[in-house]
Image (cartoon, rainbow, N blue to C red; front, top):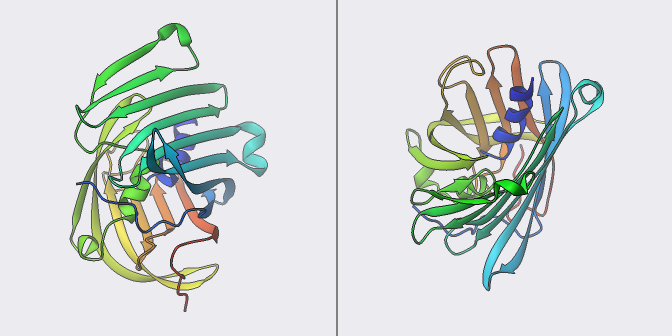
Length: 255
């Protein structure tokens, strides 16, 4: 069960260097999450501009929680924070502070992109101290990769395009590849909107039915806002849909 709700965080907060130009400061996106017929939870992403260590950054805050009947037997209260350098699109500082059932974790990561290392600190167990880990060029965290994807141009998201990225999750590096399948109209609670259909490659096993068990639809405009994410699991399916949005940079066009 813990793995299931870990996916709630992973695929909502998922989703070369690039300046962050497509995201408005003060943007707020809220997603409704369903597991089968159950209303499982919500996830909210907010942003604001600030100076961090003397450099302009985008501060992103992600909150994920279970709701309703699901909350009564498995409570999730997750907090993610990322400080992203506006000029490079790369994370400087990242926090994952989660409580999922009887499991909890509080990790902080400082990225050093000049020498491809990072410093990981376990705040839950201070006695463990901090450790320096060898990283890779252009590494993203679970929040920054969301905005990295949204910074892509229309040419970079053309049908058949492949996007590779390395994402730092918890205390481990994960390589992802995203493939653009094409465009299609998607019906939403706000109306029909044209979207780009993207499939991230993931490892099959105990969680996913197959290597490409996750599909995302993002708006086919300069915002590239995720409208729908579906994950076919080994048992059941997980769906996250955009439930509310505020202060997006470009007007969304619904039919």
